[in-house]
Length: 480
Image (cartoon, rainbow, N blue to C red; front, side, top):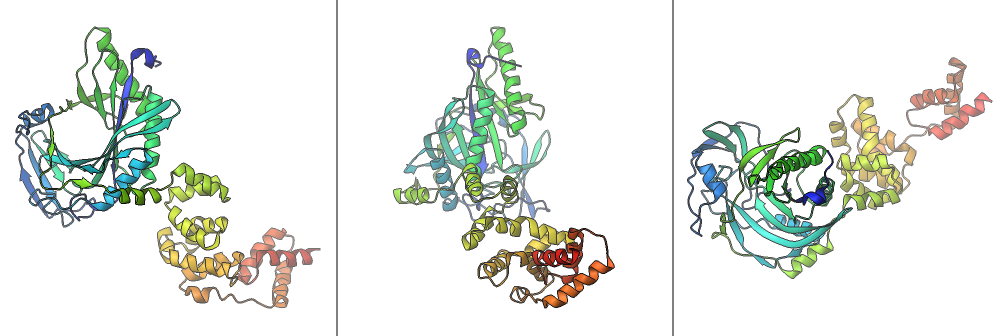
């Protein structure tokens, strides 16, 4: 359906929540999700009370009236901090550095001193009844094809517990996810069309993935806030899938427009995006009275020296890295495989040794698969044997002219069979007269074949003791 979004007064802003790839934010527990049986289960019931301002948050009151019981599964990878039985530890310094990287990549101004806050959460997903969050930066922007989009704020906060079972009167949560560092990025309401919303989401996603963030399902969550002229702002959650982003927005605009056309106002609420792009009511829009200072932690101070250090080591975006790899001579297929298989860092390390991109990409992406197929083994087993140290040794052997590039596959095959790398590079060469005699016998036994067919037989017979180029020269000499 086609709308004149400018005429409708369409406005939208994104909220993106991305897990960081470090240990938890306020303790040293690993950020590991568990699927095995828990060590114990703790039962809690959360009571809604007024905040320091004397008011009860609207969303908190709504959740509290449900009177649900909450059960929390614990593991040996969770501690008393997650159970709210122990004060939070000092904030994770690595998570702070990653947050600063992302803030700089988003052209934001970083706060030199900022207070860690508590945000009231009463749906049971936080054992304490609140989420710890700290404002890191503000006032940034990204560029899109439809104009500049402001970055309103960047918060570093702890992720919530993971719901594993929901009932009418109870919810079971797993504490493995609670406390994983989570970055919340909010844009200004500068997005003026569904296509710009999607472009902005993908652009921010590219920036996030250039840093040390967690990958996979559930590690990134996106919300979008939408309003049209004459209507009220609605927050839509579960907005991750790029395939349905534009459709979801169009459906929501149509829903809000139906109220405006009748001279009514839609409810100010939070809705959940379904797989078909439609939305359903989730809860009322949270109020502004649910934030108050965290009394167990000091003010977070970010020094100029730390910001300068982070600036010097900013990661490059995927688009920039792709251009560099292309200039080095790699094909688009190889570049795509490097990113898909997560082997860019290994490639960089090997490239520093020899600067031979085509050979390095073969070492990392093609030869292990070919050898795995030939040996009838799993690729994981082959890659474990052909570790980074082994590949570096083989590459250095080529660089030092101990072996030729054409010998690499044969050397790797020998290593996979259990021969030490130092022995595998010692390639025995037969006397050419013996090789020529073998080739002559093959031609007599198999008359009428093509040169390439003969070369395949010769290479199989010689087992790497002659190069394909030398073998073809001898074959062509006898076929004349």
